[in-house]
Image 1 (tube, one colour):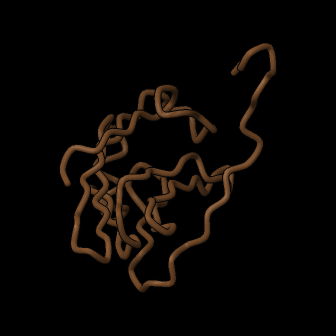
Image 2: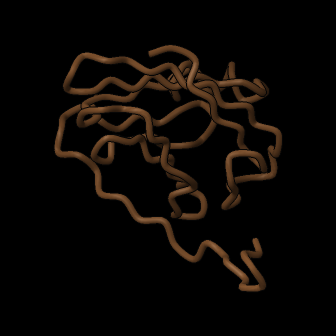
Length: 122
């Protein structure tokens, strides 16, 4: 990415997991989601990197859950769309849709590259 003649590149994305039970969810898409303050962090276990954070909550994120979950991975590996639910301390629930356009593994990518994220419901 270039900004006025200066090159900018993401070197590291860090996020701390909120200390809440059931705040981490491993999806059939081989990604892990967890609450990180008022956002949801998406972690790739294959590369041990946080791919992105999803802002959108006004309170601390208490729970995340992938649809389909990793429990049904054998049935869902070929799916191009997965969904992620996230809930916060104020009772708001967001439904995120992820389109997996690049199935070659986890790459560090912005919202429009390997993974596309969008909030559908609040």
